[in-house]
Length: 246
Image (cartoon, rainbow, N blue to C red; front, side):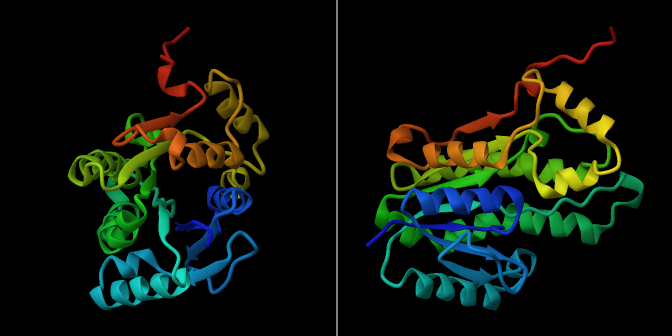
């Protein structure tokens, strides 16, 4: 029976690429998302609102049982916490509701999924991969909720790796700008701004979802068996660049 992976937020740009990559690698892919259905990026799709799941133990338990049912006797080898909520606003207009949704989706849900699925992951000697962000280290205006949640997710990665020791590996993949439909839509009428964003990265381009998926496959494979508590920055070199006035 094939290995299994659970990928949250599988309908998004990075999530879709993750689903395709793990399918091609021979995994049984279980995907989650808020919409009622998704495309062909997974073998089994579970509708799940991570914000609601983080607030209600009954919803959380129902989701756990649905994952066990979807596994159908398989072991869960990989949990990828990919889903994220990005609520952008300056501090003056950032509501507590938007703040809490960011924390619930980006931090509390990954913690709870790791907790409820630990027996399955431990049984397989598997691992958890959290999808973080360069915003955990360097951010910009209006990203207060998002960057804070991602910084905490990076911290959770390290803490879980220590807490779980040799039982389950826990790592984090932190991308910079990635060419997803959501990002491209934001630049649809401003191609010059997209060119500027590309030029901010020393590699002179933004990343692709497929590149994220390839790194994820490596980090969750036996080839990275000595890696735990690590944050891998797939950032095109942007965190190494000092932006001084010319």
